[in-house]
Image (tube, rainbow, N blue to C red; front, top):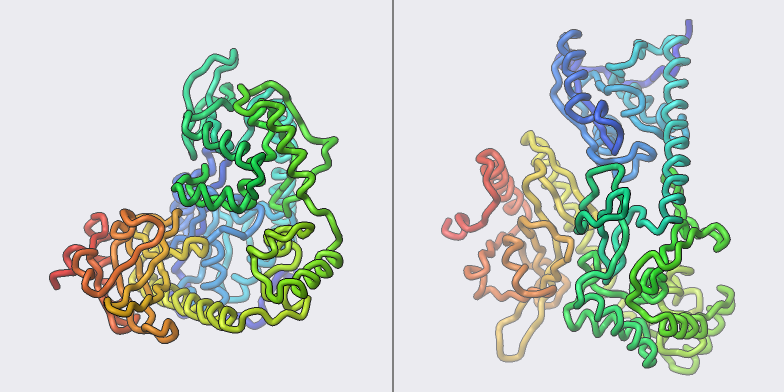
Length: 538
């Protein structure tokens, strides 16, 4: 009998790898039977029964199985197997659905084939079939994959129907509360039970969540934004004023043109709950739904903006909204270039009859690509500076990858978050990577700048420090993130302030790597919070 998915050019395992196994565990928001602990217990029992030693664990906690995106555990597993770096001959998984609920069942088979091609046998420990490639196991396994995908589709339809029903009653379904509003938990008789902070969830399935006016200072900010826009200010100008005042969005970040525009269009501020404006089912691309399928519940929230004010703002937004084709967008941009002799984001945003710079970037991608399409070279020194910045950022990401490999070789679990450019070790230590530019002064020593990200987790910062020409690499510095947290979004430091800010200097990243690995291993082993204080006296 022929076997499916036979790897003809697989690698030969070392004898010591044939009894070594890795386990992959995943939990999204499924039932308790699929918890990480329950999966690990079943896998451990299987390993003991078959005389296998579990030497490595790949895990994805709180991640959907619809796609491989954002699943760092399985991504790392596939990378290790594909690069022939796996030091095990077996991969143990609880069942077929934990591998993934891929809507294309061939995707699930593809990842399993990668493992088998590298000589790693995939076993589903809780299934009733032996994954030996026989006709029976292949049929059953494929049916299980189809069932896993169908489960997600049926669950998605049920959740959507329930969300529509609750929205029609005026309740909040998922997501954060808009700026200036708060989420309140009520029981089945709409009696208030408490307020939910960001990231918190209700405990009882019978409870409901509704929106209500938030803190007075945030409500006043919302009213100020509406009035400021009616006074003739553009969204970018309002965003700059709020950022200058230190007002953060409900996500804890700075304001932008798009965030102001979205706020001005929210009907929640006049008391309406609107649901189903956007759809993103089963991990597909987000789409905008037609207005006839929107679900609107009017008067469900105590309004904080007068209806007349909201209508005037909506009319002003429509008048300022430029709806033209992409070809016409380029034609008007060329005319603006001929008139001004140069282009920039402020020039484009201030020009009447033109879409905003954000709209141009949404349609044409990068600023460089937009300028290329209209035959404008732009500021060559700016492009050179941008290219240099990208090159240095890539160097730092390469350094992060190098440090990640060194930590993993030391037996630590290290994952790199590209959005924050931070390396997380054993879910305990965070190491963020940045590039620090230099500013020269006539009479004073030079200073270096670090831009602190709002989403930065507490831990350490490894900065690539540039020379005074901001082109060559000078050295590397390591500092605790607490040194940055008291200096706003931008942190300036000089060599004379290294000691006061607990900054350690290294001539090469090799030295940084050796030092950080030593400190990380020491602190994680002791179970202490990482600190750079002891190293200053070394």
